[in-house]
Length: 149
Image (cartoon, rainbow, N blue to C red; front, side):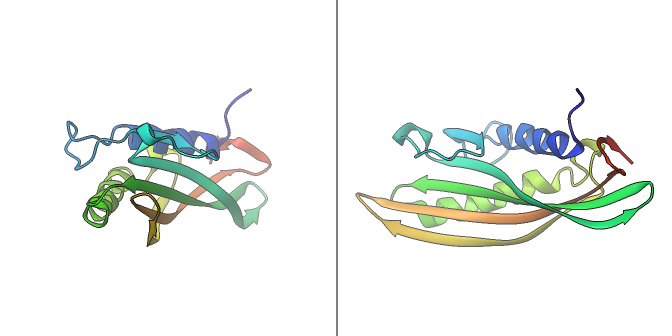
């Protein structure tokens, strides 16, 4: 069975997130890059990137085409005394990565970053996290989510 367009978009984003590294011109090397990681992070996972495609909105449904917006989030988790500055650099890394291909390998019409939300928590050490929210716009053939229109 063919993958859905939404799955192909998710795979494209995950591939690009996995390429974020100092060697590739970014500011951070990640311990973990995951899709829908719902279990607790291990110490070796930090810093971590977690991609979630939370929901999908059908914005237009004409006889031959369904236009969609998939609402996505990337959660960045870091640990250490330098967390605030690290997180700011990590935000830039993700923005740069997403902006490098707003068409998600030809499966999307557009990708728009909506916002980011910075949070700090104190536990045994300082933990920081960022949620970056963005929308991906794509069309597929009506009632066939596997075919790009």
